[in-house]
Length: 93
Image (cartoon, rainbow, N blue to C red; front, side, top):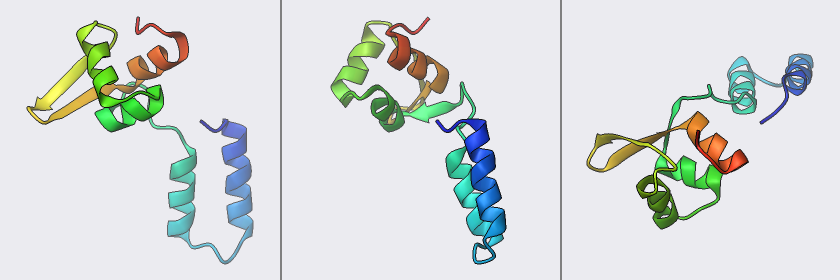
């Protein structure tokens, strides 16, 4: 996650370069800003944040360390804040 003052500095650099289009600037700044905490994320994103495999992620759900939200039988989501808390502190609550 990039600190807000760095995002401002990047925005200043982008503003000073006439060769960067408005669309490019928007895409670059969007990539720099973190998504809202608590927003739903996919299992793949959760695995990446936690640095674990899919079986380990399933184990976390079965052990009650994470709560999965089922959208369908093949589509589950996790709460970003809960995943990040587990990644950073080792517990989800």
